[in-house]
Image (cartoon, rainbow, N blue to C red; front, side, top):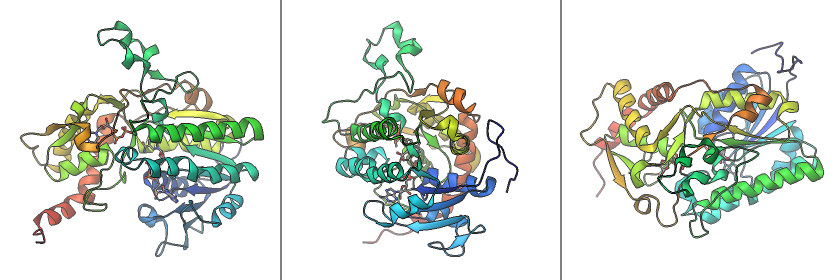
Length: 390
Ligand code: NAD
Ligand code: UDP
């Protein structure tokens, strides 16, 4: 573990205790790993699951101390557990990652989505504010919704002008579809909790940082349906496409796969979060886009690239029809809608933390799909060869 580490202003970094809510998820597991391997900080890891951080908790998981006592798992649901306030009080900093954050849930379970992203986050904000504890809250790039450019005529040259699509924390509007498009229940709940945190900062002096992730991807993201998650579950696009590739099925392109995304490697993004943790004077009061503007593709291009990369890492040729088109209604059900394009402006994070993403889309897919193949290929083969129970 590093000693004599200094912050961006040359001051020594003192070990702190972090209450990390949602530590057992995709981002939480990578953040815990980073904190354990490269810093002297302590983590109170809060979640209802711990499978993705089991390797950091020994010998058997729940309640055990490990890594010289620096990470401790607390299995609790923040909806209804009185232990939450005590854990926040014990820590110097709280990081809230807990959320329902898979698009398949936004239009099919809008109530759970709104409760999880707004109501359940309220006590966390309140306890931080009342106890004068710093908060890093995970929001989403989806709070921007659609770009201004997508409302211009298709042939308008202004569509090529970055002023109409680049998403800026302190300038861009939040543009959601109508209420019946329940897809926006998530974005709207996240927007309101951002506004509440901002108001706690303005009126009560809460020290906060808001993170807006732009499609962070990598190993341990979501689940592979029927292997380590429900057979009928619909995870985010990386896991959907990985599942299709592992099963040698065509990748499903929702509404033609025309939406655009910028993908960032989880390890690059975690570097940014560590800078926020260790440079409070530069991060407090800020809202940060964290993404990789250089890794933009349409979902169709993502499918094509993942097919090529998977062939390379698995040694298997791709199938004859690598992709098929599906309607959003068929794939997600009634009330789905989509963000058209997501390019993060990097000015604020660059100015405050001097951070830039490094990994190209090809490279991050190569390491991620190598992990997916190594982790799941055998299990999928077994599952496919099992006779279906009659
Ligand atoms: P994830 O689903 O892998 O992790 C969320 C974790 O929170 C899960 O382990 C879950 O069990 C836990 N959790 C949920 N409700 C809880 C509760 N009531 N009590 C205790 N634990 C609870 O998701 P992730 O990708 O790691 O995302 C983390 C955060 O980042 C979320 O707030 C999400 O909205 C935001 N985000 C992520 C991305 C991304 O690219 N991964 C993009 C936009 C926003
Ligand atoms: N998508 C797709 N096929 C899939 C899963 C997702 O075409 O099997 C599309 C989805 O419609 C969206 C994009 O991929 O346009 C990214 O979806 P994801 O679930 O990762 O979340 P989002 O970026 O929309 O928050």
